[in-house]
Image (cartoon, rainbow, N blue to C red; front, side, top):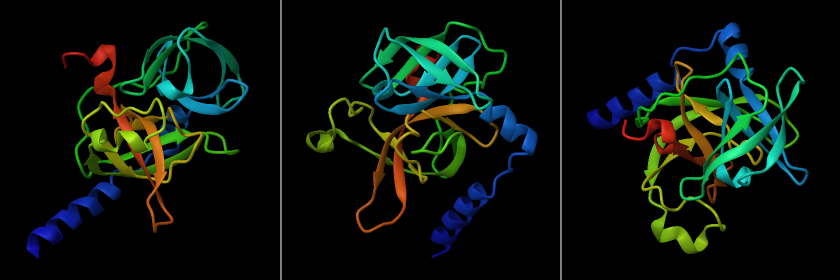
Length: 211
């Protein structure tokens, strides 16, 4: 019983981690983009002056797409790297950005508080937060997964967050505002009214290789 209480307390502390100031909120939100291809949309985050991180199932390799920033600016970005196995992709901005979010290649721990800025449904650039709640091996579930889903990351991280379609590709930030993952699969647990999500860790990115 005591161990259960300790575990519960750790989750509560994680959920009550340092809140973003208005300035921090706006700074991180400013690096988020909406990615549209004419038939749908997803989200992404600028992680260097020329690079956007998103999910592989949001884009196709080699295509150039319009991206929209929270201040209404439009830009073009070309998909330069795409990995179906991890559901991660990188896009190169044709015009460099001054503001970008930093990537931290350290793996996330269970109980960590995370958040993202995304474009769920008709909403734009909204914050969603949750807790890294568990891990899941998808290999045994491959037959039930849509084509192109990242069944080869073992295990993926489960986050208790109400992400929605349109949030796919959003950067997953830690409490310090560092990019630690990307939103991949959003699902509704049977019998529940809350979404859960599977995220791809940034450790799959070329820049994090060997870290």
